[in-house]
Amino acid sequence: MVIMWNGLPPKSFVHCNVRGIAQRAFYDLTKVIHLEIQNNDFESFPIDAFPPENIMESLSLMYNNLSRIALEAFDQLTHLKTLDLRGNKLKSIEHRHLIHLNNLEKLFLQQNEIEKIDAGTFPKLPLYSLSLVDNKIAVLEAGIFSELSNLRYLFLSGNRLESLEKGIFSNLTELEVLAVNDNLIKKIEVGVFEDTLNLISLKLEHNKFKMLDKQVLLPLKKLPYIYFDRFELCEAATHVRVCYPKGDGISSQEHLLDNPVLRASVWIMGGIGCIGNIIVLLSRLIVPTNNVVHSLYLRNLALSDLLMGIYLFTIAGVDHHYRGEYLRYEFTWRHSMMCSLCGFLSTLSCESSVLILTLVTWDRFVSVTQPLARRQLSAKAAAVTLLVLWIFASAVAFAPLSDTAISYFGDEFYGSNGVCLSLHIHDPYAKGWEYSAMMFVLVNAVALIFISYAYLRMINEIKASGVACRSTRQSQDSDKVAQRFGIIVLTDSLCWVPVIIVKLTALSGVPIPADLYAWLAIFILPINSALNPILYTLTTTVFKKQVNKIISSFLHRRRFGDQHHSATDSGFSLSFGMFPLRNSTGRFMAYRDTQSSLTTNTKSSCKKNLTSV
Image (cartoon, rainbow, N blue to C red; front, top):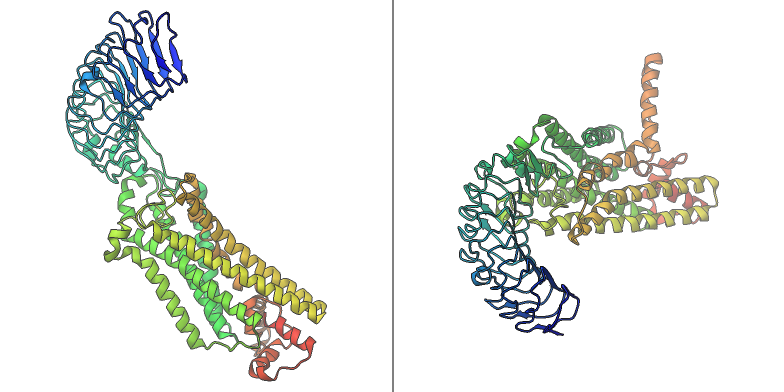
């Protein structure tokens, strides 16, 4: 359809499949005030389309395929107040297009392909609203808007601006709203806002600058609203009444941990993690055991989990120290050695705990599924294995802090948030994102898959042994083993699965609620550190028996004097937290010494399998 109207025209051509507009097409529209030609398919707008005697005040040409406009196309529109060209394919707008629009007040050029505008683009016009949103503008020259002294609303969002230099906004003394969000701005010069003293709203979010000189915003003493994408930038706008955002889900302008529940929870989780793991370390050092290797594994696991408790206590202490005035010290804290140390401790704890849990699972898996073929690992070999794991985990945690890797990790790998955690949910593609994804997704997923598979195999083996034995006691014991193994898999899943899912979701581009990061940091990640002592030691029957023995011995000595108690339980049973059968230790040691001469009695074999768990 080509518009060549003769007669009284309608005011609107919307979705009319218009493919071209002829010259003099609107010569009969002398009485039309508003004309809409929208959502059509024409590519050019001709010269001399409007009659000299028109009184048109509003022209909308939005969402067509318009890529060429004749320089004289709007010469006759001297009464025009609103020109809407959004959603087309214009690559430029020329001074000649606008020179005769003496009454133009609103100009909408968003969602085009404009790459450049220069100081001569805009003639002197009574324009008070200009939108250049979602174009490809990379540079703005000084004085580019100086002829638009009446401008009150200027929208430059969604372009490719890399800097805001002094003079860009010169003579815009009436400007009230300025939006330069969603650009690539790395630098904002001091003095750039010296003429825009009447601003009431300034949008600067989603750019690339990480710091802002306080002198940049100092002239804007009347500014009531400013918007950043990171609350810490509000430190450069302390004189502004309302600065957004107020926080990042973890921290706020007042507190490192903004949520009161989080502030209480970090102390609780830290306390559980520290106290539980210290008890495990002391008890496994003091109480004798027949399974030295397994006890060594669990002492190292407790040490790993203790580091998480220390990390949580440190964060809680820093939050208390900066309470009520965190914004003043936010940058100093995130770039401090203490924050780097916290990030190192949390990463070291997570990685070493995953590796040691995998090693413990492997040890149990081989013991249960291959009891006849397995040769007991020596304490020295186990210590060497653990040393290698610790070196590897330490190297992984320290890599972001090394000077040689700063070009890859940047200076905020651990300091990207107030809790110094490298999970990177809100900015999933920040520097070093591949490394973060490897730690929290790949390593955890592989470990979880193996641990789940291994414990399921073990449960099946134990249940099969229980069926073969046909003993009520053996069946009850196997059920308890299955329950304990199931709980272990469940707690590992509760810790790692949410982290993996949230991390992958963030990498896929789906926005993550701000508060979720805080709950992951304070509750989800430390779950294993708090529960491992309970699962592997504190709730085991042998541990409770040892505690009862110590208490009974203490009370007995007070009443009757010291007596020697030599009875000990099987270390192998201790490592798995089961009720050992009578004389299980002797049977287990004999089993170790005489593997090659095992009896063929089915019932005896079943008992050995269960007592070894």
